[in-house]
Length: 285
Image 1 (cartoon, rainbow, N blue to C red):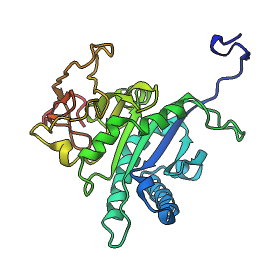
Image 2 (image 1 turned 45 degrees about the vertical axis):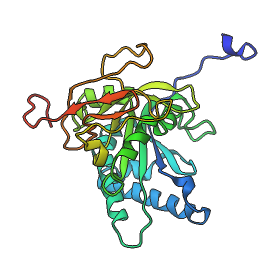
Image 3 (image 1 turned 90 degrees about the vertical axis):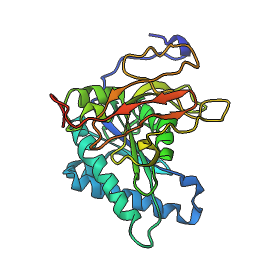
Image 4 (image 1 turned 60 degrees about the vertical axis):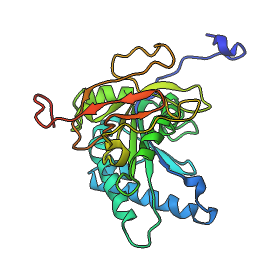
């Protein structure tokens, strides 16, 4: 079968690789650090990640990372999708806690991370193609999503040390499917975009320890840039083909034991309104 986009190449059928979970970790402002200490940061990130995996009860993931690769300002690894619930409700909070301990240790270099988690068919058979595929590409794009960077910028650097984003597939299968302990309302839906890239996909932001502007009640000042600084947030069910420049307001009930709270925060032409409740029935955690 010839792919019309590549008429000179013929694609033959082959076995579909097993689905793998893929985790990408990225250090905030890595390129602003002196080159002489960048390797030190890379080592610390690995150590804190391994410590968080152990504390989360994910020793098998720690010891058997698939297609482990350094990305310069972080790293990427894969694992069996059966570990996705633990990565969300155990590993991410433990990584936030580990970063907090590190950053409050006298003399330590301050470190904040963004994390992306996706899932899909990825080869991991010990060959040169290990880890290559759409799911890994998606994870690398998600970790650079403008809305995630905005959330980290709004949060207090002294309290929020980690911001996470998960693909829609992971959210639907793991979170909505109630395989993990995090309530679905602890995630905020966005359409993830990356400046300079054609990437455009639904995704879900989760901040284990929201703070600062993420908890601000008065609206934040609008962006003065002629173009929005972040992609528009999209409430569940919203048509992504809506007219450009449309102002969005949502009232989404969200439990914030752990999660992102964007209470009436505004940026550009985007308004996000979230409320919290302590007497939610049914599936409330």
